Amino acid sequence: MDAQIQKSSEPLIVNRPASVVMKLARMGSFHQSRLSFMRVLLRRLKAENWQFRQAEWHIDKDGVGVATYEAIGPERTYTLVAFAHDLPDEKRSDRVIAEAWDATFTLHDGTISQDDIARLAANVPRQEAGRISGQELVLSRANRSVRLFDYVVDCLARGQQPERQKIEPIGYLMRTTAVYGSGKFGAADRSHWADRAEFAGSFQPELLAVWLIRSFTIDIVEHMARQRAPETAIKLDPNIRRRIGVGNSTGLGMAPFLINHPALIHAWINARETALTRVRQLPNTDRDMICNLKNLVQRALQNANEWTTDSPYQNHKTAGLRDNLARLAAYLTNFDPATAYPYNAIYDWGDQHLSLEGQEQLVSLLIERHGALVDDLAITMSADETSTFHIDGSMTIGKIKNIFDDSYGWVNKIDYSENAAKARVWYVSEEKLEPRLGERFEEPIEPFEQPLAPGRDVAAARQTLDQWDDRTSIASFLLAHPEHRHIIRRMQIVAALPYAEIHDNTIAADMQPIDLLRCKLSFFGASKFDPRSDRWLRITMYQGAPFPDELARLDPDDLAYPPLHS
Image (cartoon, rainbow, N blue to C red; front, side, top):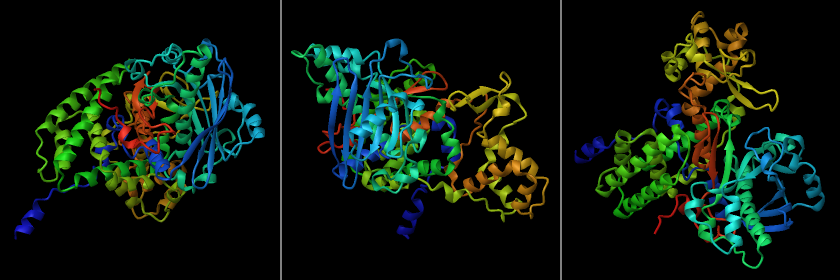
């Protein structure tokens, strides 16, 4: 009897429902976690004992030339080729329409030859105007941080270390403005490397390239310091160097990805939610683990204190996060480690007392120290999207309506006849073939609209479906109404994959596009989100992570949050 009573008193802990998780305001509050792709990559490189070396350095006194970096794994070698340029200040721009950069890069498949370097030298600096080949996996470019690059060069040239309080808020010496892969501009198609073990997961070639680019940004700033003052110049202190990542400027080109890849997005979010559930289901813990969590909260609070932005939108959220983390730290001070299902109790407290920003930071913190329990989920964070593309034409209209009721009930709360509910239009710019977001009732762009409003399209399909007999096959319906084909396919995908759909109106007047960007970038492992408008933002990647010469002796996961100031 006692066992039955105990069993009945156990909390029911399951994955959070999509109706909670898949709201844009919450998705736009996600933080990096140990399942983020940068951290998965570094764990793999460390576990497999990859070796790294700067193979060539032909950079002149003006900071112009070429350098190569090799990543040598158990089976294959990859080479980052970096071209350094002398860029006048007036040509430095974050915009995708820029035509010149401080540095340009490609990740080559294998050890590179001089002939290949010559071929790439004629193309990589031109970026979209040039072409790489199937021997290259990634194309990228970067600009110097105007605020930090020259400051660090000057400090090192004088034999002084830069001040950490000046490094930390910016967090990078160079900022990438694009990292292209998967067949763009001639690069190898994803099918060429998708089955390679070292690239299991999402965006691994691109993030390997960015990690190696980070080394180049350090090498060139130290090189410029030596050129300026060879007698007094010094290298960066490793502890300061580690707090320098790679910046990135990201705009609307990334936003439609979350809508266009429903099966993949489900895989990402399902892994994160499953990790949270596994931790919440732990029946007990000990004092050391709670002390460890308290330390992580303090480090996260320090990170939040060093997170600066001029964006009123993000400033409000970050101020709330600082308050949330301080309250969480106070709560944990008196938390009893003997509490049954302790992490579930902590999560429930956060759900009741913290903002969305704080709640999602807590999710990442709860997962953080449970690698043995959750790291296996990393290999589930990819998807064969071809397997979900086929439409089941035998499904009845009645079944499709049931899917609507089960998965798209949130659509009933939106009146798409109102202008505010359909105020925006997603389209592709003619000049750069990049996604853009315009105002439906202010610009003549509606004829060019992309199908990036699932809620509206589901509502329209439902109106037409209601005119048909529930026993009719969906194949018959689509023969008469092919305009609904894309959304019927999507509904069938979402029926099996609950986290595949955003439960919000993606064309509403008050929709925040940066929530889409923030969600995706959190899965990359980005931090220090700095919105420059509601449509583009800057981030930091790999801040705090080990460099190639440190990976064998340092734990990259332990460096994900800044060390506490002494």
